[in-house]
Image: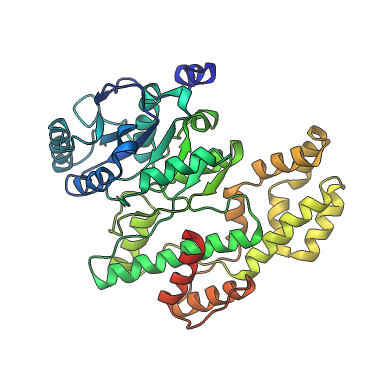
Length: 415
C-alpha cells in the first residue's frame, strides 16, 4: 500500500460504519462499483451482462453493489432494498466475485440529503483495500440499470494497459425506450449530449468527454490523486471527471459499449432520467443546445490564451472584446485580471501556465460560458443547429432529421 493511499484512507475516505460483505479477497486488478436504490428488477440483468465477460478478466475483478437509501426513504423502497440484499447474499452469480455494501438497514442508511455521490464514494473507498496495488489496479463506475457488452472488461483492461491518462470515459448508447414517447425523448437528449461534446472537441477543450455515471473508469492511483469521489447528490460524475482531467487526464476509451436505461426519473433535478421525464410527462426540455457560434468563440478564446499567455491582461481583454462581448463580460465577472496576474506570477513557462489556466477555466466555467448562447428550441431548430455545427466541423450532412444526425455523431464519438 502506497504512502499516498494510506494518507487518503486516513484523511479523505468514507468507510465507517459501512463495510464490504461477500468476497473477502484482496488481490483484485479491478473493481466495478454499482450503486443500487430500488433496483431489484434491473440489477440481475446488469450483473448477468457482467457475467458474460471472459473468465480471465472476471477472475481479476471485484463487483461491489452499494445498496443504499436514506432513513426518510419510503418504506416500500427500503423493503425492496432489503430484498436486494437478501438476493445478493444468495450468491446468485458464482462466476462473479460479488461483494456488497449495506447502506440501507436501520442505522446504516445514508445521512439526510445524501445520495448517489456518497453511494459511489462508499463503493470506491471500500474497494481500495481489496486491490492489488502492485498491478496497476482500476476502478470502474457502473449503474444498476445499465447493460454492458461481452468485451466490457477486456476493453477497459487493455485501455489502461496502454494509456498514460488516469481516467477514461466509455462509449454509450441508451437502451430503447419502453414507449414511442420515451424513445423519442432519449434520442433527443442523446443528440444534445453528442452535439455538445462535438462542439467541445472542435473548440479544443481539454474537457471534451461525456460525463455519465455509468460510463467511466480510472486507475486506482488516479482516483486517490484526484481526492476520491465527491459526495454530491447529483452531478457527482461531472465533478469527479473534471478533477481527474485536472490531475491525471481523461480520454475516451474505444471498443466497447455500455447501455444505460432511458427510464424516467425524478431522483435528481437534472441528468438523463429527469431529461426524459420532463419530455414525456411535462412536454418540457431541461437542456439547451449550443450553436456553432458559441463553440467558435470558445475555440478562439482558448487559442488566444495560448498565444498571449505572457502578455499583459489589458492586451488580452482588448483582443477578447474584438471577439465577443459575451466572452468579455463573462471574463470580467470572473475577475480575469486578478487570476491572470496570479498565473503569471506563479509560472514562468508556458506549459505550467497552461496547465494551471485549464485548472481554473475548467469544465464548469466552460459550460457557464457556452450557456450564454444556449437556447431551448423546437426539435426542428435543434436539428438545424446540429447541421450547422457539423458543417462548421467539416462534416458532410444529409437529411436534417434526428436519427441520421445522431447516428453520424455517434459514429464519430464511439468509433
